Image (tube, rainbow, N blue to C red; front, top):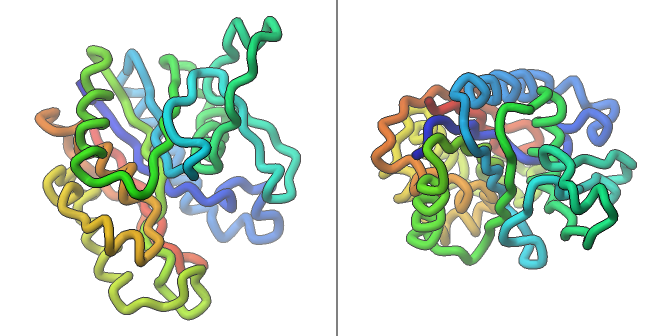
Length: 242
């Protein structure tokens, strides 16, 4: 059963080495992510699953010990999801590299010294329909007596003229609906997010949030919104459920 969840944005800019001179701009978001991960640790889970958007080649499961990097963003900074696997340490077959969203998750976990439970990763993405996301989440929630989720994903990327997706007048309302749902741990509101609209607004968090909705159904968790802003024209939300 799901006992806690942390929702965090997933831009590589969250990593100070990637952001470089712009790093201080996201200090409040990083602090909120640290607080959200503290809620996960306090829940004493048996299993932590990190869920984030991924391109097709990186979708599916990523076992504990899977490595990632920020080479594509000009930074030589390797990360690893949770503890090193014995097979990997012994020179076994290397796993696929983590998608960027889960590399950010791995960085957050390393930054906060996560050692409370085994960690696995799951990459999801378009065109995974809402119903399938919910079923995936329900399966995750049933995997252990105490399951926690680290849910990575951004809201719309269309909040300003300089945003990656340019300005779309629908973006602020979409982000507000998502923020309210995350603040209230409103499973039904997350399920109701429109995949087509999310895709048009480049909201990469839609599928991971709906996986969370499936995992949380019937768990009776309460939510708190810890951060809500749109630097660079992209909606970043941080929430904690417990």
